[in-house]
Image (tube, rainbow, N blue to C red; front, side, top):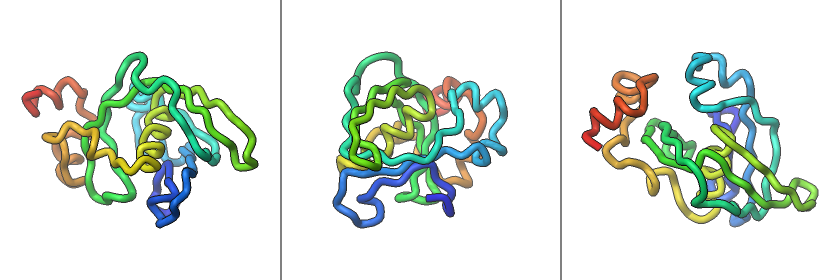
Length: 156
């Protein structure tokens, strides 16, 4: 995960049939992201932690945010993915103790992305299909553009 670098990794991504994911969004990953983009994404550093048997309690409640996502399972590609802006996750921690996580912004997105892996889903199952692009094309055409402008270009 860190070598990629990525912000999360679910056990099925490495061939383990476990309901477990690790998450960490290091401050150093933010160095190439503008302050404006960090604020827009509500992205803040998240300490390394483990979630076991996670369940999203409010899966379809509240506002949705759309941003481009990539994945270590599909390297070299990005797509626009709508996700809940905030989530409440019930899980066990690394010691097996019950834990509730209230997350918003980018952290909520990471949790949803990793929990999707635990249910056999990838971001491409949720993406706006016309937005799917290689990293090279994403950087050339859409990186840093407002989402409304991306939708206009996609005709959606």
